[in-house]
Image (cartoon, rainbow, N blue to C red):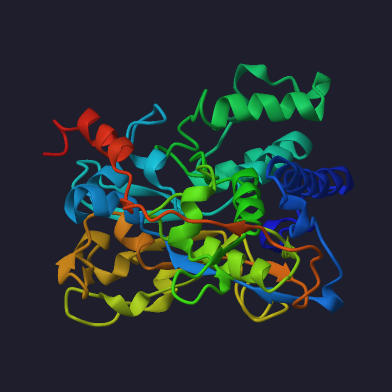
Length: 396
């Protein structure tokens, strides 16, 4: 497997390690889910497959449904050093962001979003420490010492790749540490929310492809399960009320119902497809130019083999010559100026690409699930409300 977004920064050893990491994630996910190996594959021949890309937008749906839009936007932007207190812990749609504000904290000057997988950054940290530090410095727009990224654990000359990876993870990833170069204070490099990893995505894929079929209560025929029927039987590997999981579960379940094998497309990753820039207006009512959104760390439509972009990073800011900043930009959907980076996430279209075989390729019969009718709350709000309570003084 190639590096996410078509990047080419790993050497031979790093490329081999990344390819092995992807294969191991898929194999472990298939083994962890009963029947998971019936449909999920690490890879298969491109000539005998097609590509599908379920998509959704980046604003966390559960948070807005549980708290209301105004409080949710403030909570999603909340910056705390400790994982679990608002902000990044609730950015669970496979995209995370930081909101850069003026010195007094009242105005937004820039919003930076990333879909980069922590799994890839672990490999980068292990095999290309100099490149890693240079990349962090580029994102932070300042000089960065290796110790700031690897902590006090770094002794590059005497460390193995595995030791470098562990040092990076302790310093930059959850739960032990997210330093200023990945917690949004000075930069954001890769995702840290517990659901936003290749391993979690592989587990969801394995589970969604083998949930089985259901007997229709009206005519007795077997049919594909809907996402609302399937998610409750996935043992918490997918979450109700998110924008992403129901879309992924519905598509993957349909593919399995058709007897198709599934693998991640190459290069694997979570990708930004574009942004609904036409929803934004200047204070004078003019459309925001598309080039105020700067995509990076990926492939543009002219570079991707299927014409669908595969970006992993997006920065939105207003050029100084415009005479205003992000906080003056108006969202025509709400008719209000932007007050949160989460509102930019709401405009971003995300996708995961899968390579799928022809129908009927998978062997064996799917299991039949007997569903018992039960009322289901589509939004599990307990965790979200707990985060909000921690910040109730700041979020009235």
